[in-house]
Amino acid sequence: MCDFDNTIVSVDTGVLILSKFAEGNWRFYDELYNRGEMHVEEVLRHQFSTVRATKSSMIRAIEGSAPFTPGFEQLLQTCSQKRIPLLVVSYGLDFCIKHILGKISQGRDPQIHAPRTRLTKNGVRFTFPRRRTEGSVNLKDDMVKCYKQRGYKVVYVGDGTSDFPAVKIADVRYAMRGSRLAKLCDRSGLQFSKIANFDLVSDEVQSLQAALGR
Image (cartoon, rainbow, N blue to C red):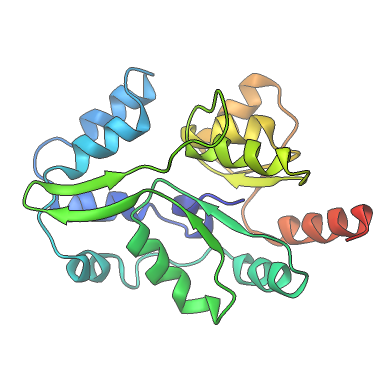
């Protein structure tokens, strides 16, 4: 499982869109979130409520500005060839994620677990996925729990605060180097690896599959 913004791609596409289209001090809600005073889903609702733009204009705003992190395309290919589920778990805009991934997927589309978005006269509206497991903090740790209950070993890659509940319960943990997630893992004493690309992840996925005899 991989986060999208600042993980699969090297920028935060939501920040690019908010910087161009949002009105007011939308970063204020990030500060509340970082202090633990607001849930990520509340933050998104507030920040994107002032965005008045079409899907095509938002896609144009990120076009060419969201390069893939090195090694992700190889990971995608490896998972496709070996029939290993690859899930993108993200609080990003679903149509932007699909558009960017479509550039390299070539029929190897990963599953995307993200809020559904719709554009209204009152800004972007989100429908968040229904939680499938008891006690989940957000959609990310919910999916880790769900797959572990099915007997899967879960490799998780992320960068932010919203990834922390998921990475804590994953079997193998990766955090992007210099990220907020890496700092949280360090403070908590979790065993994890800091990465700048997906090379180690591809190796780990293949090693796990071989060890499990799949």
